[in-house]
Amino acid sequence: MRPGVTILAIPGAWYVTTELTGPADRGSQPHGVWTGLAGAELGIHPGGRVDSSVLAYLVDRLGGFDVIIAADHNRSAQHAEALANALQADDAGDEALAQTHEHHASEIWAAVERNTQAVLIGMQRSGEPLVDHRVVSSNQPTPASLGQEWVIASFRHNTDDETGDPLLHVHNVVVSVTASEWDALRYVGNDMATEPVSKGMRRGRQAGG
Image 1 (cartoon, helix red, strand yellow):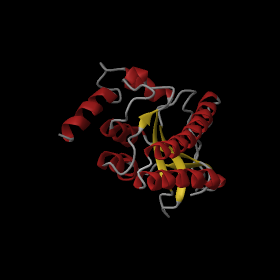
Image 2 (spheres, helix red, strand yellow):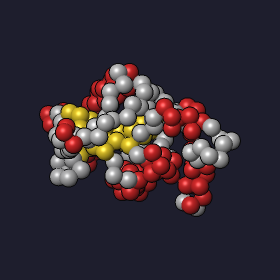
Image 3 (cartoon, helix red, strand yellow):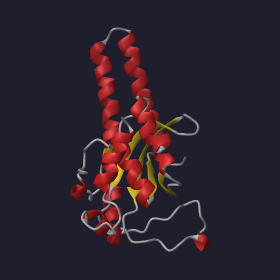
Image 4 (cartoon, rainbow, N blue to C red):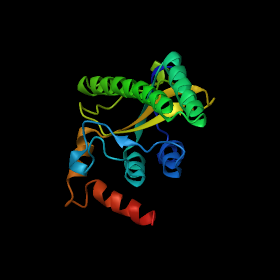
């Protein structure tokens, strides 16, 4: 994984549950939060905790992209050093110093998150089409317009997913909801329309026990 912005087409709901919501539900990674400008009509609000069954349903039904925004290696190393210093101070019984280092680590992450949100808002407001960076341009399908407000679930990770080295990055799952699909999601009464997300949410929760 490299610093900056990387866009990947999500191959299926299994990617979300295996790489993002699963580790969060097991406590090995922080829980995701909703961060997009869209979703209020579906009961999705910025800052709310991501319901894994809801996200899996949306991605399974509509598809999506993982917009990965990673900090530079220097900032990531500073964060790792601050956490290590906090642990060392805590082991030495210096609670005040440990809190100082923890605060410094939190400030670093906060700056990364502010940058992430600025990038995502800019992409939404410009209606930027999302394409998989792994696919050469000549083989890219014509991207559908997702409008200027997206449903996004964001997940913070401290380390590179492949190497385990320090690399602050955020996985931002953008659900591929086009204008016509929004109409279908909003319309509950028509059996011919795409099944409303609310039914998917209920079924997901029931299946999960």
